[in-house]
Image 1 (spheres, one colour):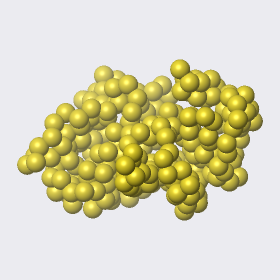
Image 2 (cartoon, rainbow, N blue to C red):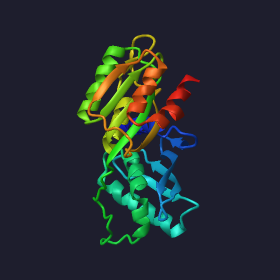
Image 3 (cartoon, rainbow, N blue to C red):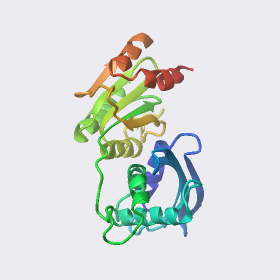
Image 4 (cartoon, rainbow, N blue to C red):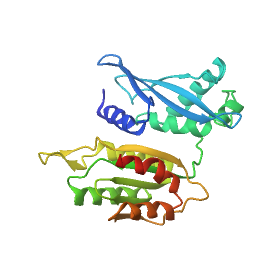
Length: 264
């Protein structure tokens, strides 16, 4: 398997880190890798539809398209086939580059429209090449540690600047949360960089990739959420200070549900 594909698998495992979200089903030097991702997307009624997406990455991927299968108890067989066909159409536009996360994001945003227009003909509203504006997104990450802190922080600041992301890199004792705000595709690029770059050093001082990052939460920015104007690095001397940062940003629920859990 090509190095970009191996790095993509590593990044996907970090992104889809919730309970049962990710599972590698098989690996083979001759047949490639098969894995499944469990996600949800808005259906016709406005309710979330659970989706099981199975991807088969051949050994020469991403020079060729992945195999894709779609399963859901909430979709008919015909609807599942239509979703698969639309994903493959999108994949054709992304040939030669890692594409799985991009495809998952696309179906999360477009499932309802796909089900409304199941015709796969050339007159479809979602023909190959069409993209949808995801709007402003918010993602909460957690880093386990930083050994080479000065260099690591500068790298994170550069990535955020290059990708036009705003938010906070926060330090409070051993807790290192990161809030990112921006275009969803740019946040995805950040996650890939974070997971695949040699950004830190191991216990022996050798450069290493970040293997301990986790995605705690992501959502489209809501009306009550503050829009961050810049990306800032901040250190907090107490949990109360950290909590106030989240409250000021309209993220009290995010703090209580996810950040407090890091202390347990």
